[in-house]
Length: 180
Image (cartoon, rainbow, N blue to C red; front, side, top):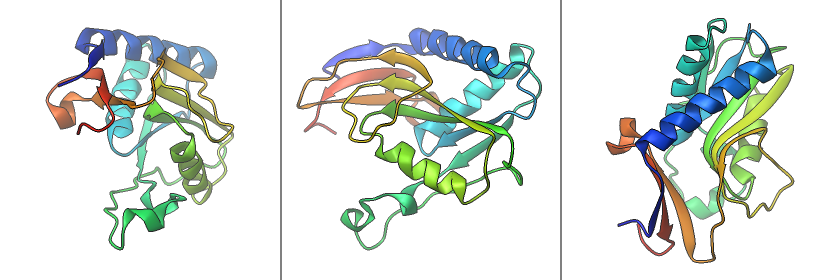
């Protein structure tokens, strides 16, 4: 049970539409644009953003996804057998504009790991970071270029993003940190 619903499905849809328009505005015709989602929920959000960017009249968008598990700086804390998902990037990201998509920006460590992994695949011309929720609390000097919504999160709370593809509904909830 959420402590508070921050965004319902309609609000998530509106925010993603605005974020897609912002991406098109920043990238021009979006020719050669690669939208890459960070596994789990960032990948689903990236798929939706890519579709919305194309619907906005931009050139076709290449889609990719990253699993940053093996690039985490706390890998030893995860345990001896971390669950690793798929990384699926286009053959060539060299010289292209990449929009990295995640659901929640918190400490910045996930984004650092994603940047490290992207660097192993080539050198994009530019990388933009798009996040649905920026909850503050950075431990690294990383900030998003495109933010759906900024929220204030009190100690003992966390933000949970639900996407219909994985959770059966769209929404963003603020929950007590000890709940799962």
